[in-house]
Image 1 (cartoon, rainbow, N blue to C red):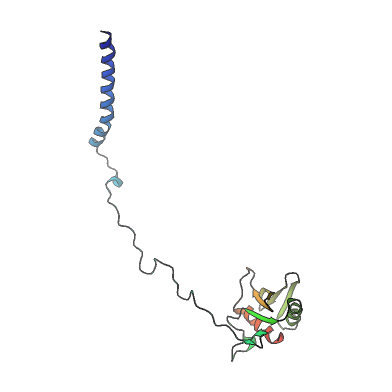
Image 2: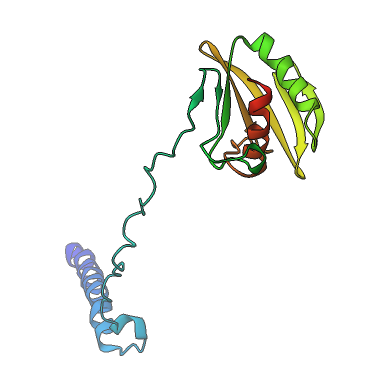
Length: 177
């Protein structure tokens, strides 16, 4: 008798748990939901238009024309170009000799040019900050093998291969030969 008293509530609890567990799915399937996203179809994947699926490479590997070297000491201007007109693409001058002799020569050449204002000198950095044609730039000299390389740099440190920087290097070129 004692067993039937314990067994009956236990069986009833087990039956109730089975009905409750399986009933949720049954009840949920009977309830009509009106949520639009549940009935939506899978959208087609995005397609990239031709030409936009990889980066453009036109001109990425183009090698710029280099100016010739006169007497092995300084880059020269292309034929038919005037030094005052500037040279597009000239980003440096090469001077024969050591950095110790080239840095003072660069300073003397800058002082003698009309339209060039020397703002500051930094001998430890071998550079001159100058203003030319309204643009402030840094002329930096550095030893490169047995020659000295002079470059014009913008305020952000980029080499000025055209514009006022190239024109200034073009004006300095005949004075540093």
